[in-house]
Image (cartoon, rainbow, N blue to C red):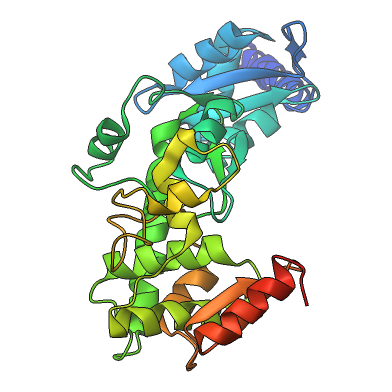
Amino acid sequence: MARLVKRFLVVGMLLALAGLGGAAWWVTQPLALAIPKGEAVVDLQVADNDTPRRVAANVIAAGVETSPRLLFEWFRWSGKATSIQAGSYEIAAGTTPLTLLEMLTTGQQATRKVTFLEGWTFKQVREALASAPHLKAKTTQMSDAAIMKALGRPGIHPEGRFFPDTYVYPKNSTDLVVLKQAANRMDAALAEAWKYRDPTTPVDSPDQLLILASIVEKETSHEADRGRVAGVFANRLRIGMRLQTDPTVIYGLGDAFNGNLRRIHLRTDNPYNTYTRAGLPPSPISMPSEASLKAAVNPADTDALYFVAKGDGTSAFNDDLDGHNAAVRRYILKRP
């Protein structure tokens, strides 16, 4: 009897060892995939409350051709089943059970990206989001005001409130997720810039700083000129002189602007016409860069009250109207 029991134990151990060897081989073999036509990967979504068994079932439902029970047992046997993270994943050809589990437990999500450029308006931001790859559109039918409310910023004008940068997001995220990230970035950049505000700078709040920086952003992209442009506007604000800046007028015209700014536009009053109204406009007119925020919070020390584009990306600055008119004749009218 003892010999029979011993024989059964030996056979059991041999079977177990064979099973372990087979398992060790299986977890290193590429999984067969039923990849949809036109795609290069299988998409997998893992929800926050998915159990390891549910994750295994979803892997098979997504297009991985293996046994869901075998996959679940692998998750469980590894000791890492409870470490599987929620998210959006891509299973590519060559993925093995071993690398699949590593991907799921370390949160190696599939990502995409969208870029917001310096000087863009919120309208352009919305257009970029609408065309971003694998980004769920939650805001398409929402008004600007509704979007800001959804972001927890009710009553705040959206212009200039999002930091220009490239944002990486998990595949199949919503556009609100990206907007919230960009809004938080601008909050942080604005707060950081405000720490270094020159007390003599004629802006009384971070909101005013954002408005001024947005104008600087639209007036010049030349790094060396940002501070001087901000200095001109600061000088004008100090003495109550109208800013008379074309970008605010263009912004106020909205879709009516056809690329040709005419004299009648400068004379027609609206809240953004800084030729007819003193002070800053009621909101930013674009997304300012970090450089423009820094320029607006610490303008260059200059006596200039005027500047004009020279046509090469730089500007000519002048302290008086006669000098400015001469610069206009030279650089705009092309007259001696």
